[in-house]
Length: 243
Image (cartoon, rainbow, N blue to C red):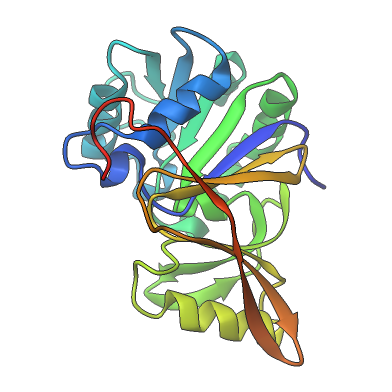
């Protein structure tokens, strides 16, 4: 069932793909909270709680957010974190990595129910790559080594997802094939440096922090996956990082 609240699904971009940690996409996420100094929690489960990844998050958001990290592996500075901390945030930012591992671990710790409750309270949910995939019913993932369809998402958003659509070899062709063959439901494909904004499970808009980046609605027609390009709003470069 679609979640009540705001979700932002990043095909790529943000501090994860920034050389200097600055990003118009991350600025946009902060603006969505409506707070001058929001509480932002990074969830690095998909990367096995990468310490370096979490440190990069802290650096990118320093001075403009009260940051925290949800560590389910217990290898962050604060050790294992009680997942209920997610209910106290303004923005929850899910990192990339293995979609399959993220979903399995989250379910063991009761994270999906907490996220649903957080969104209903007005907490913005966001994520990149695996952090895009997780919200949908299905997705394109390399969690198993090679690209494969995964039909075991949270279902907060209907349909399927494909991040890094034009940025990684094989993503586009395979996703079209899987949607066409029915291995994945119809869905949305996002290029690097783009994102899709959802509210109460409904599409709101597509945005980009770089020129010439695309988002597509992919549908099934006569046994084939068909692309429909979606209008993308270019985000203002407020920190001088995009081109």
